[in-house]
Image (cartoon, rainbow, N blue to C red; front, side):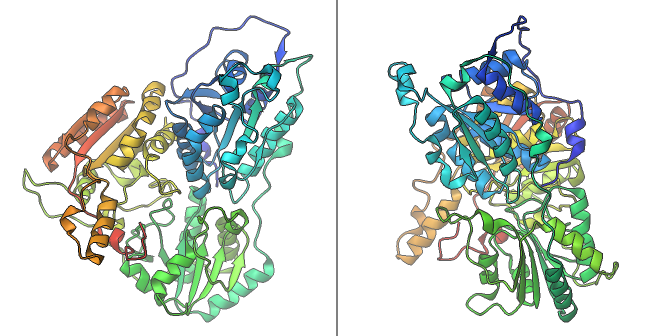
Amino acid sequence: MIILENFLTKPHLPRRDVPVPSSPSEKVWGSDAIADVLRALDIPYVLLNPGASFRGLHDSLVNHLGNTRPQMLMVLHEEHAVAIAHGYTKITGRPLAAILHSNVGLMHGSMAIFDAWADRVPVLVLGATGPVDAARRRPWIDWLHTAQDQAALVRHFIKWDAQPASIAAAQEAILRAHKIADTAPRGPVYVCFDAALQESRLESRPEVPNVARYRPPQPAAPAPEDMSLVQQWLQECRHPVILAGRVSRSQTGWDARIQLAESLGARVITDLKVGAAFPTQHPLHAGPAGMFLSAASAQVLRQADLVISLDWLDLGGTLKQAWVNEAVSARIIQVSMDHQLHNGWSMDHQSLPPTDLHLGCEPEPFVNALNLLLPKGKTAAIGHAQPLTKPAALAPDQALKVADVAHVLRQHVEPHEICLLRLPLSWSGDLWDFSSPLDFLGYDGGGGIGSGPGMAVGGALALKGADRLPIAIIGDGDFMMGVTALWTAANAQLPLLIIVVNNRSFFNDELHQERVAIERDRPVANRWIGQRIDDPAPDLALMAKAQGLIGMGPLKSAAELDQALRQAIEQVRSGQAVVLDVHVMTGYAPAMTQGMTRDYRN
């Protein structure tokens, strides 16, 4: 993941609570030394919901560091702390810290930690436990909030954890955790601090380590003999296909992928589960992209005689979608470090793909190395740019579909003006073009519900002061589970637009109930029971207002949406956070339903 320096050097910062300056003192506390390392690592923000287990560290962040570098951002639920850090890092590549209170806060935050794990995004999760020394525990509460092995709650879906027993070990643990989190394949880590250790008084101030000596290693380069074999296979093939998967938000990497595709005349397939990886309007792009492989993409893939996977998410499952029950006839080159992260507890590693060559490196070093070996400018005229779907004109009172929401939004913004922080499952790849790596950030990794608002706030935090408008389009179920994350956006004064495509249902499961009913010859008409979010319909605009945002809706027609968007975009440009509640018809786009069969895929 490549840090985008322009976002890190702009002076536009979130609102900060400024503490009263502390009086000079020679006293030094254990948590001061921990806070000093966080500052030395140049972590800009710490997300937290307060808790007594880390009251020492909280004090140090405020009264020792002055609530700056890092600045605390408060959240209303621990899951939001990790989700906001996750969303921020998806744009910048720069890990943030999330502090979770004791075992209970860690349990709250565990879903978001799993999301970051499955999305291969680094997050520095810091925690605390009640005093390990039982003699120092307060009655009742300290016993409840002390665990024998607190990291065991999340160890299956983090890269590394530690519970240091001294200040020197605590400083080293933070340095090691940061290094491991930010080394490919990236992911969350967890460091737990004994409350008594934080509150211990030190005889002298420990020296702050030179963090430059603990940086992550440079990305691995592909082996020369492997590159020679790739070059040979490219000379022998006629129909190469590139699966552009988990890649960085770097513009340099984006340009290199275009150069590679054009040099090879290779068709490129992209995926809506991950961020924008290749221009969708390019003639070599095979689409539309979706959560599952579209029929057009499956046909292109099936015709390939050489497939280059750039850390494609679920390579094995994708090949099965294209070749179904037949043996994969193409040569498969897998470029990924992901195999080093699989531990067997979770099946997030997906189906085991057949590969003829596996290069253990990240996509960008491979693409750069291959570009050096290839002549430029082949640019085969295979394929053609896919036109965007344009819905038919709507009657004034006609119900909206997700495609209509996309069409109205396109009337108000150009794709390069915004960053789509999130899209709903009902989105189809032919509704919007991506022409840069910041046009779209992808999904949450874990496939749960409730991460959208928090990750959107994290994206807005990263984009504050940038030229792009942060816009998230999310479902109503996702919104309601995570709505209190939006308070942090209001509190920190982060510009953000959230468009809720509200079908008043957990509609994905309506489709599942429909399939079960058909298979069992039972009434399909009952699919809605236990799924609909109606009678009464929650007031989503009022929920937004309750968090301190501007809320509008419900909007039920194209004319209402057009008027509200015109106003909302100006409000976001002026620095405000806005939520639009847009009522849409239930239904999924073809690109979403393509992969839905009786094998229980979501």
